[in-house]
Amino acid sequence: AFDTLVIGGGPAGAAAAIYSARKGINTGIAAERFGGQVADTMGIENFISVSHTEGPKLVSALEEHVKDYEVDVMNLQRANSLKAADTEGGLHEVILASGATLKSKTLVLATGARWREMNVPGEQTYRNKGVAYCPHCDGPLFKGKHVAVIGGGNSGVEAAIDLAGIVGHVTLIEFMGEMRADAVLQKKLKSLPNVDIILNAQTTEVIGDGSRVNGLTYKDRTNDEIKHVALEGIFVQIGLVPNTEWLKDSPIEMSPRGEIIVDAHGMTSVPGIFAAGDVTTVPYKQIVIAMGEGAKASLGAFDYLIRL
Ligand code: FAD
Image (cartoon, rainbow, N blue to C red; front, side, top):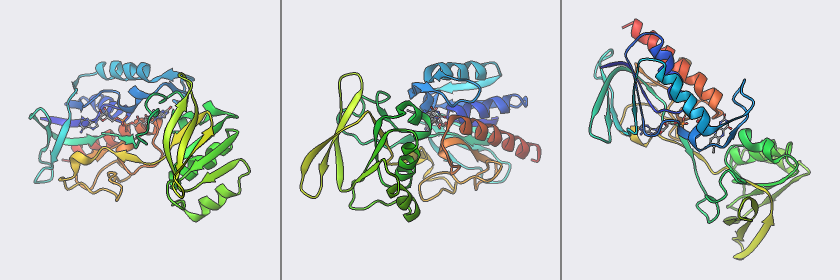
């Protein structure tokens, strides 16, 4: 059995595995796809101390760093369910899709999250070519340009306010007849001179010139008319979904949005089971934050082990 078993191989999981292995304890990491969301990222300009890098480059650096240590790396392994130990200090079990069972005294769950997509024509074609999901990451790439934000919930309205300070113009597109964001955010948004809000609008297509986005079409849901907006970027803000479906039969406490609730040491509601990164309630989903949280959860697990 492992002392610490990490599930997930994104920045949070990689950091957790390295911190755990450096304590000289028996460490394993199982991931469906090593690298996680970083593998799908083009330019990264906010990984502090590195002015610019690319997703695949950072993924190989993460892999190399993990391989510097004695870590049992199990890539292309999907966890299907979790059975928590019956007694404190007992072994937790993770059942893989392959049918194998991994046992460990402590776990660090770092299965990340995924952006909800619009599922309209053009979205995949122009992903990273004008279609973006993270304003903190990609906002500065659209300096002075016209962008749309899809979604009028808190994250959409926060993104629109944030972007309005960087880009030339923001069009916020909301499907329903009103925005769901907090009133104070809506008020702030409406006070900005370079923001338009379109309600009752269903985005139907992302349009481009073959290499970059140059517009979008939406259906006005009040009269079914199709309309076009010329723009250079589209930030999709219709939800970040935590990868916790595999934990639904476990006793681990989650928020109403399905994020794992952790304490200041990264521990979940089940003693010995820790979690880190985008899969948790910790706000602001970013690489530097996921790495810090992964290190923290791993140190939390080590502290727990030495008290057993
Ligand atoms: P993830 O990176 O999501 O990794 C999750 C890991 O868990 C993966 O290895 C996955 O395969 C694995 N996994 C999931 N389910 C299971 C399962 N059931 N069993 C086994 N393994 C499983 N952040 C920045 O700081 N700067 C940026 O420029 C930036 N740009 C981004 C661009 C895009 C397109 C996207 C999508 C995200 C971007 N982000 C950026 C956000 C950043 O990538 C995430 O915050 C970060 O990757 C979260 O790390 P994580 O380790 O928590 O999760």
